[in-house]
Image (cartoon, rainbow, N blue to C red; front, side, top):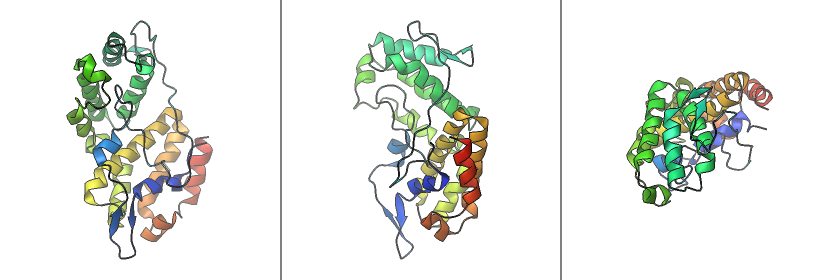
Length: 241
């Protein structure tokens, strides 16, 4: 079962409001590393999003994306050969990466998610994969290496955020739950969460978008208390089961 809408707000409250209206940053993780954390040596896509609760755990949405034969290097997305994933995963095999077996599926899912906000974001994701494909096997297999850090940072931009999530993050900023340095990161993570819903079903996507779009209409007190938008929350729960 997907995490209900109101729990999506808790990620934004990682910087929680104090009684004086200021914010306290409860984590030392910077926006880029948090938003791009993923497979350490291959698919650098976010594993956290607005569905990440602070006190309640929900099931993570998984992709139903069809992929090709991992032993041949053929990657498919909707039956169309995906040269980007094919090249990356061939490099994974060449380097004897422990992530090679799931590379095609991970890559196809990451590209499907990046395509949700638009072609500009997908192009940025492909630049990350092109960079990874060009890295040496030593860099690829080293979990401490960051050869594509610049490309990952580039994805945390308005090219990879949706209109609903931009408004969502702007409202959190207005309520002093985040500061300006985190606004794009929150919008990016929110968009990733919504994009995951698009892989579930069209109905799930529509309901999730409606839930996110409801947030800017709430008062800061409602957001802080986790109340409001009950109809949207219920619709999302039902659509995304």
